[in-house]
Image 1 (cartoon, rainbow, N blue to C red):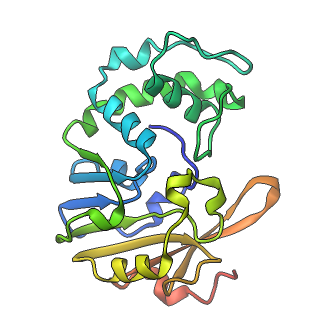
Image 2 (spheres, rainbow, N blue to C red):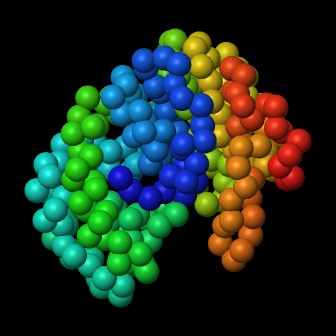
Length: 230
């Protein structure tokens, strides 16, 4: 429903489907995995207050609330009459791929009408979700599908300050101790879990990255881990 740095919008179909009726995203961000399996019992948690506030705002919105947001184009100023959540939602979507929203309208304004319509159409999917602010290590360890997409081990400078300083040794042990199914996302520079490659992506300035995962269940990627070059 909104863009965020490290979003799995291009990758979500490549991750293993959930084996449990409950899905927990401890680093929620834009929650693309939860949105794909929205009918499940969803719990979103994020340490970044603004992200949680946007999700809670969306959960309370009507379709009309979304469809009557101002139509903005590149170079426009954000109306001062908008709430903080409305402003953040707009700025994340019109200046995509950021961990902290820009203060200006970006070049993606040509997609704004489509974004508003798809967001409005998806609002009913998130009404039953549980959404709360907090740290990953505060979540009760229950049997669920844990989709864990933390700030990258290398690349964390893009994230909000509150999400940067992660003890990856502690996080690795925490991930391995989850009850149920554990899926952890990273990029190929990471070394805090035994990751296997999922897919090569082309980033900005024609740079290539390889997205990798850790799973406590065997996946199809285990058998082909030597075929993708890091």
